[in-house]
Image (cartoon, rainbow, N blue to C red):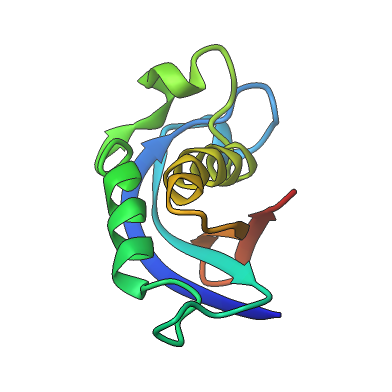
Length: 122
């Protein structure tokens, strides 16, 4: 099995209601996002997927989150925009784009700090 991973970043603010502690206050993160795709075989050019495609799809989705107050976005309406939910949202949106190119995402990892991350996969 081959797996490729790209890394991108975005900055955003959020607050997490009713969990206790400082995260209930408005705060921000410089999120790091890792997006991985996998396949058993390579294409005729010897690639699993062109890194540029995976980066472009990720940039397109992150554009809607970058420098935003996540609690106000429709995609997180009525729920806490936790790193867990951000990872799933990214997996689903980037996965839609990858599926059109017959690529398969395996995982999206969201780092909210240098020592705290969450991954989402099916």
